[in-house]
Structure formats: C-alpha cells, structure tokens
Length: 455
Image (cartoon, rainbow, N blue to C red):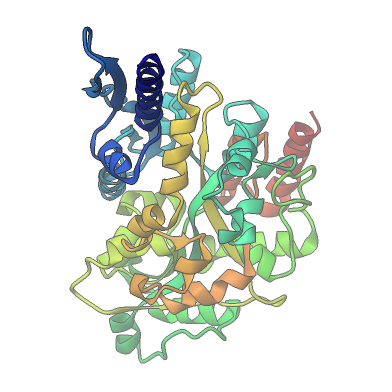
C-alpha cells in the first residue's frame, strides 16, 4: 500500500514538472497568441489545497509609442520654392511618424545666411542647413557642418555611389563629405522663336560660336529714339565664367579650393573685355543698371523684350508661364577652346550643434534620395544628382541640359568665399558700369584676392 502511495506522489511531482516545462516552452499555438497580443506574460500557478496546476495569462499594458522628434530645416527661396519645401515635408511626414520637420525659409540667400549665423550664435542652430555650393568648404572649415561620413558608413540603406561622382566631390572638404546634393543646375540658351521669325533668322544650334551669338544679338536688338526697346541677349550680369573656360582661360588655379587668381592671363582677360563690351560697346545686352530696373532677366525675357537668355533649368519654372510666344532651348555657344558650362549646386548638411543628428540624417537621406529629389526636379528646378533620375523620362528634362552634363564644371568655391566675394563684386561692378577698364580692374582684383587667399 505504501509502495502504491509513493508511486502516486512521484507521478504527481512528474506531472507538475511536465506542466511547468510546457508552460515555459512556447508551442506553435502560443506563438500565434504572442504575435496577436502586444505583450503576454504566462505564469504557472498551483491552486492552494489542491494538486491542480493551472496556467494563467496576464496581458501587460503596452508601453506608449515614442514621441516624434521635431527638427528644423533652414532654406531660402521665393514663393515657388517655399511651396516645394512644404510639399517635401508633407511627403516625408506621410512616410513615417518619428520625425517632424519645420522649415525656416528666407526669401533670399543673404537673409538666409544671416538667420543661420544668428541661430548658431544663439546656440540653437537649424538641424539641417541648405547653403550655396560655393560656401560648403567655408561651412566645413568653420565647423558649422559636421562630417557625414559616420552616418554614411553606419547606414546599410544608403549608397553614396547612387550619386554622380562630380556632385559628391564638390561636397567634400579635406577628404570628408560635409553635404549631400539634392540636385544641381547648369545653363542653356533660351530663345524667343517669335522674335527670330520676325527677324528672319535661323534658330540657334549647338554649333554656334561666340561670334554667332554676337551677330544674332545685333540683329535682334531694336532701338527707338536712341533707346533700346528690345535686347538681343543677356545672362546673369556678372557671370562670364563659362565664356572664359570656353576660350581656354581660367579664373583660379583650383575650382574648389583656389590659392591664386588667374583672371589676368591673356585668354581670360580678353574674354572679360569681350563680355563687358556686349553692353558697353555693342549695346546688345542690358547694362547692370538696366537689368535691375527691368525686374530681372527672366522677367525681361517673359515680357518679349529679350530675344536670347542664358539661364539654368530652374528658369523654366517662370518661363513655362509664358503664353504670348513660343520659346526654345539650345546648348550654349562654344568658344575657341570648346565647350564648358557652369555647374551650380546647393549643399544640404547637418549642423554640428544639432540636438537630433540621427533624426536629421534620416530626413537628409530622404530629402536627397529619389523621393525627395523628384519633387524638385519634376517642377523644373534643376537637374538630379542621382543616376536613376537623370535618365527618367517622366521628369521631362530638356535634352540640352542632359547633353551638357559631361562638360559641366563646378563654380569655384573656397573656405574664404565670404571674404573673396565682396572684393570680386566691387571690381566686377565697376567694370560692368564702365567705371574701370578690365585691363585696369583685373590686375587690382587679382592682387587683393591673392592676398586674401594667402592669409
């Protein structure tokens, strides 16, 4: 009898052990339950006064979802650009719930730079800052931007090789990447077909030379009572750089970190003289003052008072609104040394003092990726820096811009850009209004610029 009672106790203990083990080992059915319930805690409970063992399921209160982090994004641009920034933010918010973005937009770059400097001085820098490409080295050298290499290396979803190599090279300073490109801009020749037809002239072609441009501009310029009522040609009033390259000249010894100016060399100096003569001698191009009084080159072209305009792809945002006449686009005329076009870009980097650098990286990565870039390129604002989008037919990028990419050169940049610019503008403006001859102004400009670069 005692032997039987002992066996009964043994079987009871074994039953407890088996049930306890089964309670700790998830079955296929328990795994399904755990996936359906946020958190399940299982306890094995012995009911007092009985040999029974039961399994009790306790559902714990799930932790609250993480609060979204808000970051700031500093930009500049007019009404069209401001709406694009807001559209980018709307689409980014729709993709995720953890990062909220507030745009701090200024109407012009000067205001933008002042605001950014003020916020930095106050200890609350914008998390993501857009800046003109020529200032990327300065932002890096001054410690405003932090290197992006650690973010790039730690992110398996990001591939730097998705970008055109040239667009990444201009974002580097001393071998490190400080900014990412959303896109870039290069110029082309816009022309008013109606004015060409009226003058009986053939439309421009990619085989045009500088002489062809000047001769056509002379025939397309109209005067009444000694006053110009229709100009043959213009471009940004002080932008002669691509003309210099096309004629075999150079502005600096290095485009992205110059040490000496070369504008006094024969090929460059002759082109500077030719450029300012378009206004001051030939009268086919509005002077600096006349262009300012007209409201700007795009407005002058849209009004039908300008036959030819060299501008970047972003100009199509304004020109697409023209309904009075048809216009066309062609590659730039070539010079004696071949083809060249200025490669303008804007950088987008993370501030060194950002309180949310990882969240800023998530936004920056999206903003400069296919989804973010498409918003701006589809509107006609520039060229994509991503291989996959450059050939995307849905973006309808005009062929002259695509054809010019292989010979596009970066606009010069320097850590000392903010010191160089006022000096250069001083002499460029004096030449533009005829107060100084290029042969006099350029050597003086070079002397002052070289001194700044040597400091």
